[in-house]
Length: 326
Image 1 (tube, rainbow, N blue to C red):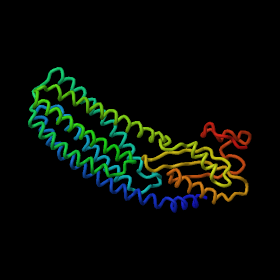
Image 2: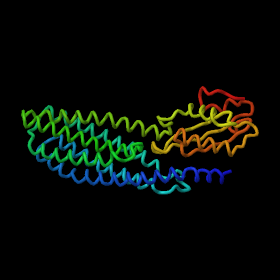
Image 3: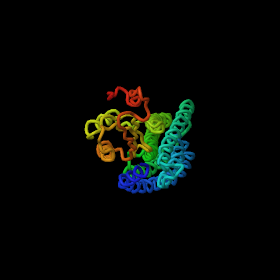
Image 4: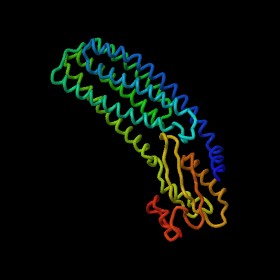
């Protein structure tokens, strides 16, 4: 039974795994290019921010520094994910990408809070700002960030790791736009408080997007059902469409990185049903209809192997409000 189980997964998942590997390799290259662009311009922007005394530029340079580290970490996560599974890490390193996405969300939070604090200090005591050089540097930064965003935007946006990388570059892009706007206002009016005000505006936008990324990554780390899937509806769909399948229970659905969905379930079959054919049909429907490409299905007859002989209802504890069959 164990040999059949692994053989079945090997034949079923080969195509999906190959496609994911190709896409992952492409994303890995995109992230590396974006890290190089971001890191290269970060130095220029930090020097420019110090020279012009602009918080918008300094904040964006600080953001780009963290982004360079975050993008490098995202690249390394893609690199690790290409390693094969081992006896100790049976799912491989795919979950590393989710951990990196969560870490990136925390980093963005810290940056945004620092920008808000520094902006408050500068708003209370506005320093002089050189609007002309600030405008030139911010304009160059915008071009670099647009290039990085376009490179990453063509990647797999179902991957939390890639979305975290895109979020970092998008934050940089917004920071450059804010710095350009601040520079124009300072050149036209000399009103320097616009610099910290727009910095806070960018920080608030970054905080909201970072919160969504962290929440979704945390949901995956807690083995939560992916938001696009309804576990109970999937169970009902299988019962309605698989011949000889009387009931589905003890069903769990989760994802390693937001892209590859996994399920385990007990399939209670009618007496006399070919269990191999029924399990194969369940796996094929899960893959084709619900995008669950890796499934472990335990066939049962008469009663659940995990339940008590006199309490068959116990086996339904993981599918609430599910109809019972006796």
